[in-house]
Structures are given as structure tokens and as C-alpha cells.
Length: 449
Image (cartoon, rainbow, N blue to C red; front, side, top):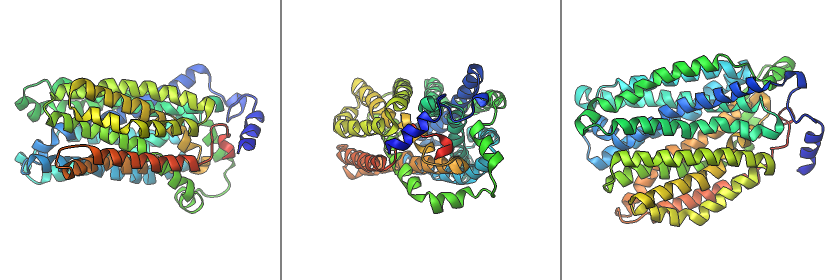
């Protein structure tokens, strides 16, 4: 395995995937990285705004005919619907990105997400229009899922395919950094409006953050329209002799790496689902002020951003697999202590558990994950393969975990979190085996995959 890597690195003394005259200057590269980060941050602002609202608002607003426990479960169910749609977004937009280029798809997905989020902010409650309210909520959530399913892979590739080999992990992580940045922004904005009296917050206060999305999208489009197509894709498009069939190629020739990449990514998303989404409903249900609970996620998301940047850079030096496997081991060691701290529902215990879970488990695995998935697939199907892999992982992990955690906690009689902890550890083991089973791609040229 090392021989091909050594050969790839020595055959390209510049350490790039493109010819020297095709390399971006520093200013252009910064613009590409900023575009990758900003687009992803806006998408995840909308995504995590929905997750926070699902924990705090959607139950009484859209499922007021149910008991509080069932309303929360139904609210998490609508969130899961969006995650189920994310692989569909990869199936729709991935092949388009592999045939026509990365840039055009990224403009489309950004607009789609912004419009869907604004419409959620305008959606009448169950008390106003009855069953149509939750149905429309699910439809708009599915549109969000399709948009982000097409966004993340392209946002990551626009940075990774412009970067030199020695910095691909760090460049690709800018799309991943957008996730916690969007979470910080969404949580801060929703937390500000959560300070309103209950009547105002449940009537109109929660809606304003969704409407703000339209302004963020306008900024994102302004930046994104100024970037160029990736040189790796342009070179592939010039030399491609046969019609591209990305979906058929992914499932017929690359199904094994698709499966391994998907399973490898489940554990960090499960960690997110437990410590970011489910934990909010848990601690608020145990008496913590909702604004304080949201502020905890601002702190932990900032920590996650630091962890992603550091671990992505470390993966450029030591490889993707060693860094990600370190996160798996950390999760297995820390699972019970962190869940015990979370179960106290006390400020310091909850804060430390969430911060450590995101920095030492999610961050270590998720930091290199963007480059890890992209390096599994050749350029002609990279958008499709990386999107399907990452978005299916998010569906299985973050999308289903809040409901699974709520169910496991109910099965325990609302007395302990042991079943949730065992579930987390099981996913870490399975993801660890998948990571171990893949090849190391951090030193392989993208056009040699």
C-alpha cells in the first residue's frame, strides 16, 4: 500500500494534482476555501436551526394534538425525513456535478435550501390549518434534505480538487467546518429569540431565524458565483471519451468502497445525534433553561471547529485512517463517562460531556472524513460517490439517532442512559472496522484513484 503512495508523491514534486500553470494563486485559493466554508455554513445553519427547533418548538406548534412525549418523537421524525432525503440529493445532484461540473450544482443547492427554510418560517401552525401543517413541514424538510445532500459533496470537492496533495485534508475540511459554524450561528440566533416570553417565542419568535436564511443565501451566492471550476474536473472532462454514467459506475464497480465509506461515517453522526440533538430535549426536560441549553452547543461547536481543523491537518501528515481510528478508540474509552456527565443534567456536567464528545470523538473522525470519502472515488464519479457515502452515513447516524435515543431512554423507564451508551459504542466499533478496512488515500493523486 505504501509503494503506490510513495510513487504518487515523488512523481509530482510540486505536490499538486494539476499542472503548475493550472494551480491557483493564494488569493484565488482563499476565495475557494471561503466559498466552501460559507456555502456549507449556510446550509448547516438551516439544517441545525431545524434540529434545534425540532427539540424546542415543533412539538407544541405542529403536533399540539399529541402528548408532549409523542409530539417530541413526531418532531424528531420530521427531522429524520430530511435526513432520509439526503442520499436522494446525492443521487440527483451528484451525477449532475460529475457530468457538468461542481460549481453549477452548488449554486442550485444553496438557493433550494434557502427558499425551503424561509417557507418553514412562514408555515402556519396545526392550530391554524390542522393536519396540513405537519404535512407541509415534512415536505419542506425533505426539500432541505435534498439540498444539503447535493451541497456537501460539491462544497468539499470544490476545495479539495483545487488543493495540493499535502493539504487536501485541510482544504476539504472547510466544508466540514461549515457544519459547526452553521450550528453556532443557528443556535445563537434561535437562542436570542428563545429569551422572549413563551407566548411570543412560540407564536413568531422561532420563525425569524428561518427567514434570515434568505439574506445569508444572497451573500453565499455572491461569493460562490466568483469561483472557478476545479482543474481536476476540467482535465477529466477534456479527456473523457465515453458518456458519464456515475450512478451505474458507483453501484457496479465501486460498491465496496461506497459501503465502507458510508459505515465509516456513521459514528461521528451518531455522536452528533446524541450529544447535540437528543441532549437538548433531555436537559430541557430535566429543568435546564432552553436558552442555556442552546448556548452550550455554541461552546461545543466552537470546540468542534478547532478539532476538525487540527485533525484534518494532522491527517495530511499522518494519514486519514490513523487519525480517525484514534477518534474511535477515544469514543470507546469515553462513552460511559461522557454519558454519565450528561445524565446529571447539571450545567458543568452537560457542558463537559458535549464539548469532549464533539472534540474528542466527532472531531477526530469527522475532521479527515471529507478527504477520506473523496479519495475513495475517481474524478469521473467522485461527486456522486462521496455524496452518497457521506449523506447515507448522515441519514443512518444523525437522522435516526435522536429517535433511537428517545426510544432507548423510554425503554429504560426514563431512569438511565445505559442503552444509549451501548448503542454509541456499537456504532463506534462498526465504523472503526470500516475505517480499518479501507486503503489510505492521503498521498495518492486524485487523477490516479
